[in-house]
Length: 303
Image: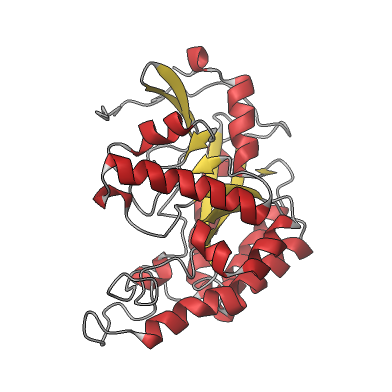
């Protein structure tokens, strides 16, 4: 599939809409559940995972099992997920789960906990692997396996799709061709959803973020929970001010093995308290954004 670039977007004229609560800003928290589906010797990958890990460069020779890296990931499933789960349940906050299917197959207790909520599911691959390395045939199989697996473990199908970091040039077409997804989030190019064309048919994109994302802790862009809190609050306040005239959307990306550590979570807690002071902001799930956009900004009105 030839992905033509759209450098213009909405420009100065985004759709003139208000979100369901009458406000101009929609806030969506996303929890990435990947632990157990990452590269590992036990998964037959011939190497251990090194990305989004507390130690940036493994000290273990390539091809050997890195037990430290594995245990850092395990913190996310053993502790971090539950800390975030309890926080969002306590505050009755909506949450979107970007779920790597194998991670939930390996952690049925987490799958059961998610199933007991009304959180929406966005497929984050069958495994947490890079789709841009796959052939179209292999990628189509991975997409289908992810959908089937998540439907089985959670009991409800994923509504959206999101690759690890970057889609391939074939991903969007394959996701649309599968037929089981309402949108994808393989884009970082806007503060609003938008429609695109896939083989002559309209396809909805709900952009994600690498900016308001706890991965910043591991890249060194922020160090403390307060740094993360300040950055999120600044982003939120600017968007909320703009949203008085133009609709806006803010995504916040989270990982159990990162923000799930206590000193980091403290910043997220304070940010949640800050958001709670603004009743005009719509805190919502990603599928709610997709449904609202589909109903109120159909393709012919998108531009």
